[in-house]
Amino acid sequence: MSNEVAVIKTAQGEMVLEFWPDVAPKTVENFKTLAKKGFYDGTAFHRIVKGFMVQGGDPLTKDASAEHRWGTGDPGYKIKAEFNDRKHQRGVISMARSASPDSAGCQFFICLGDASFLDRQYTAFGKVIKGEDVLIKLGETAVVAGNGGERSKPTARVGVESIKIVPADSVK
Image 1 (tube, rainbow, N blue to C red):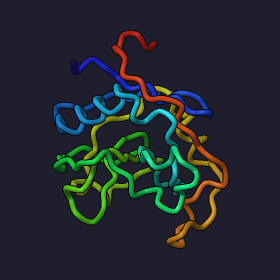
Image 2 (cartoon, helix red, strand yellow):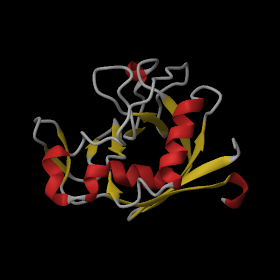
Image 3 (cartoon, rainbow, N blue to C red):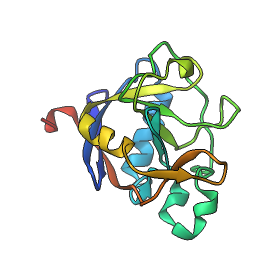
Image 4 (cartoon, rainbow, N blue to C red):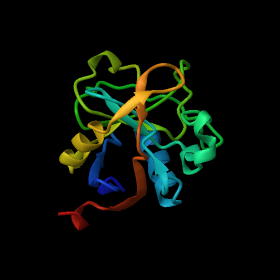
């Protein structure tokens, strides 16, 4: 159903995402399927790069003792990339992946600003239509250098309480 939206509930508040099944049908379907199973509930935004993006969706983030492996989790499979012409701008949700184009599974990122250098190289599949203030708050989370040296590791857990797929007309 194309008239569904995702409600991402965080400690900072809720964000509502619309989907773009016209340009990324399999990616949208995968995200909805995982969300409906509760796959994302209890995960965290484990990577936050100021002015660029917040990344989440890793099932390993449910376990604090697995922190050294955060960013490597997947649902047990990979999906094929659906690169498209949608621009990576603030509020756009896109699939995170490794160097291989077809390596996305469940991790996603939401852009905090213009990231046009990602256009046609990552699968953009929706956009925040409500709760942009929450996205901005998430993006202002204090970070320190992580294992790789990048200043993107939140100093406090930025939890995702739940991601629910609901009819668009139920969200006002």
